[in-house]
Image (tube, rainbow over all chains, first blue to last red):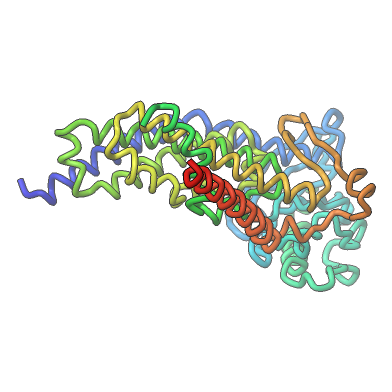
Length: 176
Length: 225
């Protein structure tokens, strides 16, 4: 057998062993990671709605786009609000937001749950008041961007736009 | 070389951070807080010890060594990458806050020259036990260096020293009153990348001065004798 083939086989064997090892570790860490991410979202939703009085149903969005999951906040059988998990690309990272829309189509609240923007600039976004509380769906006129943080602000704006685009239909389908 | 010397050399004489100046990129980026530095140090300790052990085991067996030799660098990388990925998964699952703050620098341990350097320069031609002792010593030396950097940067930059901020437990030393007493405010400059370079430069200079003095003394001592 030529030397090259032997070397290749050696590498293949080591790679296979490594692969099995990784699969084993992944088998018990992956559920934990998923649970943690879920927990983060529910914690954020819990800030808006008392989770002991409302029930939350999760509706994944399969059609793609910025919105990836809908969390319907139910009081009994009526949808009180929908919390959208939405993402958009900022300056150097993906900004993940939760935006809550009430059934009268106004913004109940919003929260940036994940970002890795430039320290000192884009990182102001999670604490910034974008002046969007209580506005009606579709109205972006009050949106207050952060000076000097254009990319991040635009990403946040894009998140709102994506949610506004579908909010009416989501509630409309539910009310009937 | 005794086992003791083998262990201690990584801490001082051949300290990977301050003497060999290896693995600079993660050391400058992850030393914003003491907690990050400790976390990074533990990750490197795990990877370096196990990679040294595995590589030394592979290479100390004559038959396997002969097969591995032509492809040894890829083999090292596969071994190291596997270990690093395991560390990444474990930190993500069990210490998510630390994982978030270390970010991309955990996967980047794969290309950390300390680990590849020890694999090629030491583990591949020493016995497994020696390699493990060397790995632990080197990793602790690296961790010590990171902690020294973080100590300066966090205390001057944030006015605090965070030892632990996980699982709802916070062990944090507030140094703002001390800084106030000295009449200075926390300087955010030190927690930014440029501050890392400055801190590292000063520490490096201090260590060079110290070791030069020591060498001079030793020289004088031998001349007098």
